[in-house]
Length: 524
Image (tube, rainbow, N blue to C red):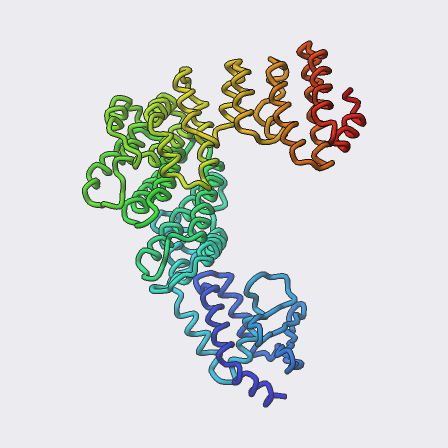
């Protein structure tokens, strides 16, 4: 049996090396838990607790039993390059590592492997966590990230989120016990990991930022930050946390100014931090001065947008207006993010200034800059922003004109609000959709305010069904006519509807199926 296992190990030497390398990257020698896992795996090999029971040459699966507190069974699938263990632990467990080392011993020293792995340990993460300083937290993050992201490693796009999640899981094991410190620790690690991954992508050739994976990664980071923000108490802080906020401010500035690519996403994250976390006026003034100094040092950063953000935060209305006099269509994306930022920060005077400045260029921006697939979402977001301010009638008309087809629903509600019911009906006669969409656009409100205006609209929708010339469409036309009858009754035009239905029956007297459906519907 020993000879056959020895031969098997040598035949699959490349697989064993690759899996142990994967385990090395996942298990961190500075982590007490990971160090204990490897120690017990090595002990199981020395104690001969791993028994290889049988090998199925057809499926290339090796079956093993590990004698532990609770025995565990393993399947090593050489064909699919997978290891499956019966224990409940996710990813790497001591049984998988022990089984690989039990095979590894046939062509190399397990003790040398263990010593090499432990030699990578610089300092215990637990020791760093106990020190509680920005420098120790930074060192903890660096320790974890240098294992997951060695210099020169080219990351596949799908691996970005996995590395972030893995790093956060490792670091959260050492999170402070005090509740008031936990959100700050989470935020520090979220931002540091994001900054480190982004720096690695910038420094390593072969990475592309224009991928769905990168977009998903950024969205995941933003959601992670927003979830952490919700845990912060409303402006009550310990004096001892001040150095950590200073360190966070520097990390945020480094992420915005020193990283490259996807500036709009970097600015979005930077704005999030300054809207929620850094609320002290002296700190904001200090950051604005720092940005003015850095303005001529980096062409990738739109310092104009950054300065506008601080004018909003510091309520410098005159400077905000003065710096938006020469806005072009190229600046609209930045202004859109700035408007979202002003709303989040609760600066509604600045929000009004920004949105009024955007209004004349909104149409060209939506038609020429925003991709077709994203226009509906942009219109919804813009509608939510403009609902926060007061516009006059001309400005509202200009807004909905800029929205175009994607603004049909908000424009419908605008017309209802102004009680311009005939224009509402005419709008939907020109843009024929469906009854369900009409209801989403306020059909019930129009029926209540001016039911007579809807009668011609019902006729248009019923005729579009009749033209299809199938019994299913005839049934739908009858349903529309029933709604029309209800509207006519509400408008006091029952006689008009009866005359209308007689005219319809006379016009389509050759369509026997339609005549039958009209009779079934008791419309005459």
